[in-house]
Length: 142
Ligand SMILES: [Zn+2]
Image (tube, rainbow, N blue to C red; front, top):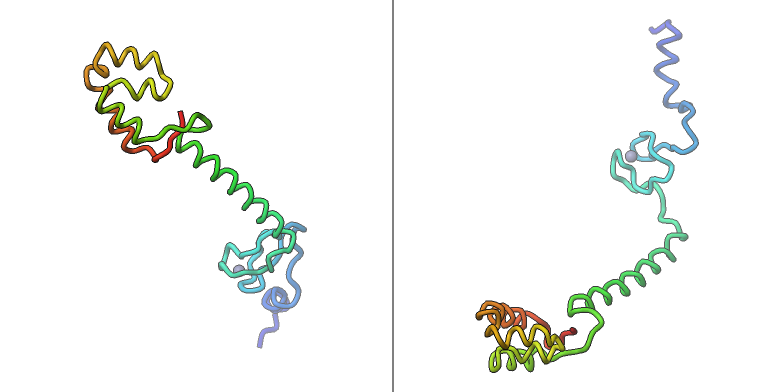
């Protein structure tokens, strides 16, 4: 038999009355660990301890809207931003046939003149432009 009151007290107290804890913490109902009161999923055992609050729903909708806007902006940025629409195949044909024609087509007259007198930067700019044009969407923006 155990007659030591200290040992008995120590053995039984945690099960009956949990020690006081800070206001911003709580006990996980699955593993009993002290966790942050904001936790929806227990970081100790990984189980869900709180229902997802209804207040979160409007935030999710807002996020969806923001994502749509940013996805649209990303798509526009990917095709060259808010400029004049140009047809990839027209530019490519001009590039192949005249070396410098696509630069005039894109409104880059300075580069067009340079391409005209240097044969497309001695062929290097011409080749790179052909590759770049091939990788553009059918309609791109300059
Ligand atoms: Zn837990």
